Length: 447
Image (cartoon, rainbow, N blue to C red; front, side, top):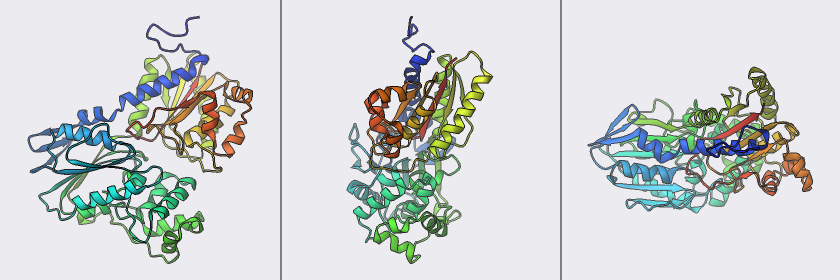
C-alpha cells in the first residue's frame, strides 16, 4: 500500500495520523513566521511608520524596546524595515540573537522564571526611556513570555531568588494566565503600564504578538505599556482566595498581609494619551493557518468554538463529544477539530512536562484503541519545564507505553508527561520558535 501521495504527504489513514498532525503544525508555524508578518504589515515611508491601518510620524530615529519570546526576530525585522534608522534599543529574549544589531543591547532573560538577564535587561530599558520629550518616539515590540523575561520588582528588597520563587508558585498554582498576570502587574516596576509611564511624554507605539485571549490584550507580558484594568483588590483577592500567601517569599507575602500593594495606572490616564497599539499576530492567526493546512490535505477541518482555557481533563472529555458530533456530520470523511488557548494543568509532581504534554497524555487514554489522533503544542516551542513544545498521541499510544512498562496515570500524577512521550518518540521538539501565540491542539477522527 502506498503510504504517501506524490508530494510526500501522509495518506489519510489512522496509521499516519501523527505524521499528518506534525505536518499541519509545521505548516502552521511557517505561515505565522514573525519576520514575514512584520514585513507584510509594517512599512516605513520617509518619516512615517505605517502599521496596519495606523500611521505614526517619526521626526527622528526612535528608541526601541523589544522583549518576549519573539523579541529577537521582531527587532531584526524592524531594524530592516527602518533601514537601521534607530537611536538605541534593548532586546531581552530567551536565547542569543542569530544576528547582532548594532544599535541594540541584547540580554538573555529567563523563562519560565526570571534570571539576572531579566533584571539587567529591564534596567537597561528604563535607562533609555528616562528624560524623553514629546518629540521622542518609542517603539515597543512585545511578545509572550515577557512577564518572566523582563522584570524589575517595585520593592527593591525583593531579590532575584524571591522573584524566581514567586514565579514558581504562580506558574504551578493552576490559575489561568490572565489571573497570574494580575498578580505580577501589581508587584512590578515595568508591568501594568509602568514602563510606558516611564517614557511619558514621548510618543509610544506598541506592536505586540498576543499569547492571551483576544479580549485582554493588556495581559500580554503583563501589559507593560498599556493601562491596567485590574485592581489591587482583585490582586489581593486572588492571592488570598487560592491560599497563596503562605507559599510566597516573605518579601512578597508581607505586602499582601499588610495590604501595601501599589495601584497600577488606569485607563483614561493622560500619560497614555499618545500611545498606540497593534496586534501583529494572535492565536486566531495560528488556528486559521492550521485549518487551511488541513483543508489543503483533504481533511474536513473546523475550529472548535468551545471554552479552551479550562482544566485539561475536562476539556479532553468535552472535546471528544464534539469530535463525535463532527464525525456524524461528515460520514466517510477524515475530520479535524482545531483548538487554541492554554489549558489549565496544575503541577502535582516533580517531573518534567507541561500543559500540552499532560493534555496529550490524558487524551491518549481516552482515545486508546480508536482511529483517532491528537496533537497539542505550544507555538513557542517550549512546554512547561521540558525541552519539548508538546506531544502527539493516537489510539496505540497507551498500549505502546505499557509494552515499555509505562503507566500513563502515574506519569500524569508526577507531572512527568515528557518522559512518557520521549520514550515513545512522540514529543514535539523544535527548539525555540521565536514566536508565541498560545497553543495549538489538533484532533483527528479518521473515516
